[in-house]
Length: 116
Length: 111
Figure 1: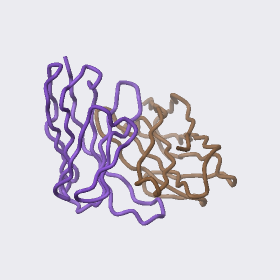
Figure 2: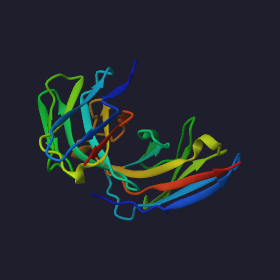
Figure 3: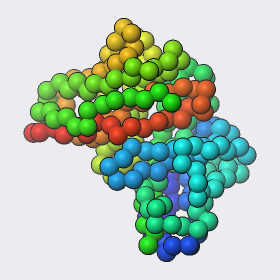
């Protein structure tokens, strides 16, 4: 199993450009998450999905859109990139929650995005 | 969201035990205590979790105070590969299982 993979690994954008980050998981997980991490900070949740075709906002959703058309993929879109979106983006997935707070999240290697 | 408080940084010597503390005085009865760590230039990885009882796995042990307002992650013999940022997180499945990360504790291990 590859686990959680992210594409691309690194990207440079100009202000106002758009792009899509792809997250893929091969563990048949129900839940998927997008986080961003700024230098010296912990991760912050952007959006998440509890199943195919469903998405929900996290802590810092502004400026981002997501889609979950297939169970194994979770896309993060930036319609008009801004320098404030320069960050490292992590995707994660987990199994269906049992209500016992036990399911762990598996993280991808991250995508480094620089917006000039 | 319930918050956790951790020291910004800690140092340890190789092959010695390390105790990483975490305070979570506002923890609710349904919050599980999770620990993740993030090695340099990598995504976070799961370490251990617990609710009320102390827990052990191959990576670490988790000691939870009786009132659940604090916990301690124990690495029994630190190695250079354990140098990472360790995050203590309270997780409630009623909120989609999302993890709320603080700044964590940066652990450095000296040879």
